[in-house]
Each structure stands twice: as C-alpha cells, then as structure tokens.
Image (cartoon, rainbow, N blue to C red; front, top):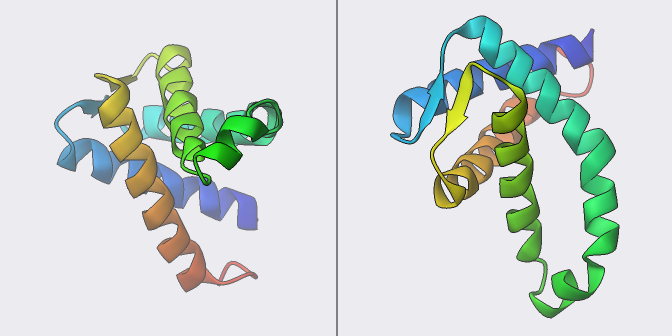
Length: 115
C-alpha cells in the first residue's frame, strides 16, 4: 500500500512540475502515473548498474555525476512514455532535482507507514 501511495504522490509531483517547468509536458494523470511507474522501474533496475559503472567519474566529481545519471533516467522515461515529454538535458536535470526534492519532502510528511 505504501508503494502505491508513493507512486500517486510522484504522479502528482510530475503533473505539478510539468505545469511549472516550460520544457516538460504531461498529457494527463494517466500518463503521469505511467511516468511514475517507469521512473520507479528505471531507478530500481538501471540506476544501480549505472552507478556502479560510473564510480570513478562519480568519485572525481564528488558525487555530482549522480545528477547526470538522474537526468539520463528522466530522458529514458521520456523515450518510453508517449504522454511525457522533456525538451532537453538541462530541463531533465532541473526536473530530476526538483522531483527528488519534492519526493523527499512528501515522503517525510507521510512517514514510513504511509499515514
């Protein structure tokens, strides 16, 4: 149940960020839910592989390269979901930073048990 609540919160945040950022578009709430699911899958499967493969450059950049990985995950979600569009890398980077920030605030407010 907690996972579903987090997906719904992520979908709402995606819609809000698409409304606020000029280079991000979402066609509707259904597309936002699909984006949230795709982002969850990409973060669970692909991101750990990318993090391990890029450990040297991540160390050299003091962890800032992880922001690039997050932006690439957003661009991959753009490629997989038809109703979601991101205009470029810098918008994807800003979107990923704002999404992570808003998700951390929302997750801290709902707590561990989802209430």
